[in-house]
Image (cartoon, rainbow, N blue to C red; front, side):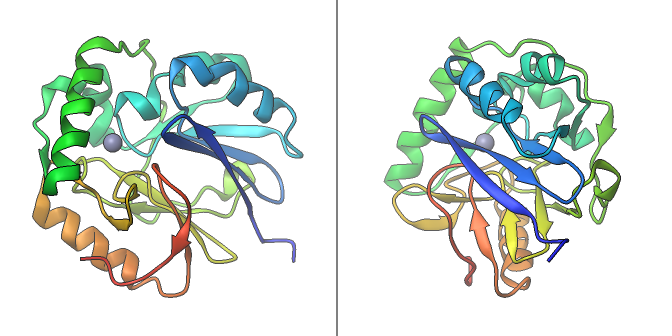
Length: 216
Ligand SMILES: [Zn+2]
C-alpha cells in the first residue's frame, strides 16, 4: 500500500533516532549524540527516499546534539515544538523530576550530561503543533503534542500503526511512562492520549519498540 510508512530504528548508544520513509520523502526523527553523527548521516544518505525534514521530538541533548550538523549535511529544515526551543539552548534551564530508583539514576546521569555535553547552535524553521500534517515533506505523518517529559515534547503518528513518542514513554527496564518529567500531570494526560490511539507499535526515544497499551 502506497501510504504505509517504513520506520527504521537507528541505535545511538542508549538513545534512538529514526528514519521514517514515506511515499515521497523521508523524515529523520532525532539525531543521537555527537559520536554517532557520521553513522546517522550515512544511513540517511543510503535511504531509499531523500530526507526532507529533521524532526526533533524535544530539546534534550541526547536527541538534538547533531541537529546542526545533520541539517546542514542533509540540506533540510529543522522542525520542533516552539515550547522546547529555549530548552535546546540550555538543558539546565528547566527542572526535571524523576520517579523510582531507576528514574533517579537516569536523572543523575542526565544532569551530568546536561552539564558537560554542549549542543551546537541550530535554528528550527518549522514549528510543530498538535494535528499538523507532514504530507508536504512526502510522509503522511500527523504531529502529536505530548507534553510532560518536557513541555514541548512531540510525537508522530503514522499510517500502518506506527507511533514515535520521543521520551513521553520510555522502554528502559520495561515499557512505561517517562521516568523523568517537567510536569507529571501533563505526562499522565499524554499517556492517556497515546493509549487512546489503540493498536499501534510504539517507537521510543530509549529502548526497543513495544505494543501500545494502557500507560499509567
Ligand atoms: Zn528527554
